[in-house]
Amino acid sequence: MKQRGFTLVELMVVIAIIGVISALLVGLNSQTVGASAMNTSDELVSAYNLCKMRAVSTRSWHRCEVTPTSLTIYQYPTTGMTKPLSGTTSGWLFVETVNIGAGVSIWDRSTTACASSPCTGAPTAPNTSLLFDVDFRPDGSSTGGTLFVTDTGQNKMYRVVVYTATGSSYARNSW
Image 1: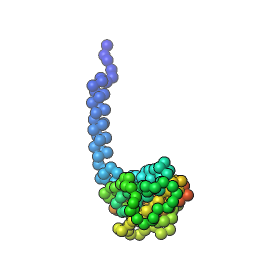
Image 2: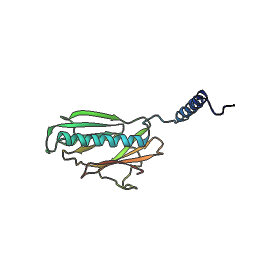
Image 3: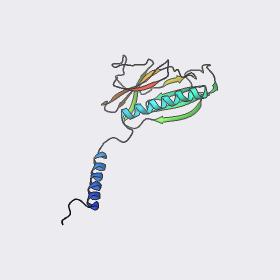
Image 4: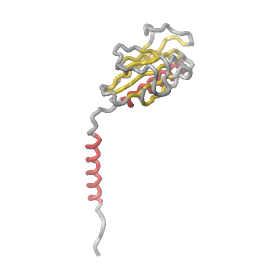
């Protein structure tokens, strides 16, 4: 009687070959992990959500300071709703910095939340001296605003929206 089918060794060799080919194909992507406008936008949303969550849980103001290459979170050392001085981080406690990956930058900002595209006042050129603060109050609300994020070739453009009343933040496709 003649046996039919594959042996376990033959099956494992085929699976290993498929795995190697898959790894090679995935490695052909020219961008490094985390260096896309979408990933950066998601990272900024996570940082804003952390800022809001810390403000509510510690009952103190938190500030997210944005530059073209990073977002830094600060905590005001006093609890309560008394508004700290704006425009300075003097006296604020450093919490964390999120760096923006190479190949992606924050072009500009708007002090209003741009919920739908096209955004009025969307940037046409990068703002290299960008310094934008979003403050989160102990009740979870914020000063709000919109960040415009793109890759170097402007192939992908995203906006990160922070709402004033709720402090909620979202990443949206296009400007």
